[in-house]
Length: 135
Image 1: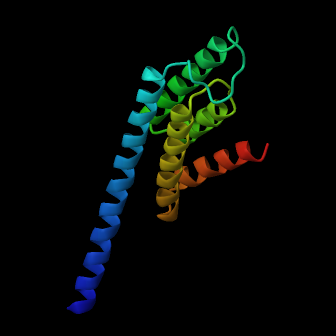
Image 2: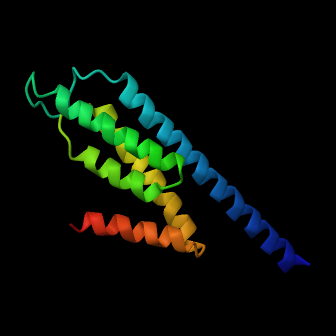
């Protein structure tokens, strides 16, 4: 009876931790969306110049929109890859850069959990992300 109870507790713990990862992704994506809606371009991390500041910010917003669309369709690899492009852009605020990093970490963590459970799509998504990092 005791081994069964232990196995049941272990299964419940895994189920709750998986639910937490989904919530974490949703939370971080929501924070990412807020950071790019409300952040003022007046406090860039890397100053580019007064006229060149708006174009990189517009490109960053386009990449973030692409990432958000990818996440809504459960394409976490597409979301991470789009956010990697945002990380390399200049003219972003510290808040924006932190929210990009946190969202990428949450999506990657979710993919890792799913891959560890044998999800073939998650494994393929992680491989796609790794290929972009090695280029």
